[in-house]
Length: 222
Image (tube, rainbow, N blue to C red):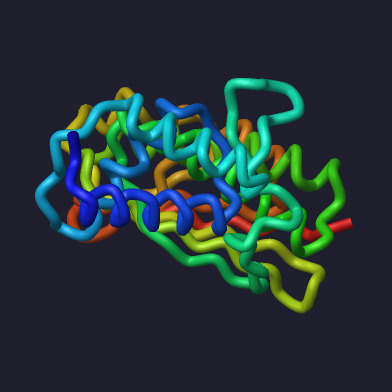
């Protein structure tokens, strides 16, 4: 049994997550609550997944959220929810790059919501989402499991820009260099061919003596 204060704190984390457009199962939201505590350098409380599911189901009863169209196990903010928050043309945030915290689903769903609210075409959304998923997978695979900085920006309603920065763990650089252009500071890793195809501009830049990776990508919107 959690305290009333902790219950309220977790409710507020869930409300904030939903307001940002993330979509996921109760397990995903449980992981994102844990991620929120880690991002804020706070001690992670001992909570069960069913607590998160119960809170989400309470939101469901109040019509604050609804189930996903394609997956009934997912929760998504409803159109008339009081949690709803208009997203601007710039969405800048951090995640924790640990696979067990569902970072890929978090970034994918948050980005799709961002793009939809900015009236991006479905074709562009699909291509941007696929390419960004590759970037997040790389940040999880090659990263140090700590903070990943992400920025989605739409310039003048015509140009989408993605920036992603994370610290990377040591690996055999030579085996990870992909075919194509590269230099000592610009290296193409796994998944880059997909990202290069779907983005109009793409660079993966290694910084600080190969301890940080920065993705910079752009796509002209239809």
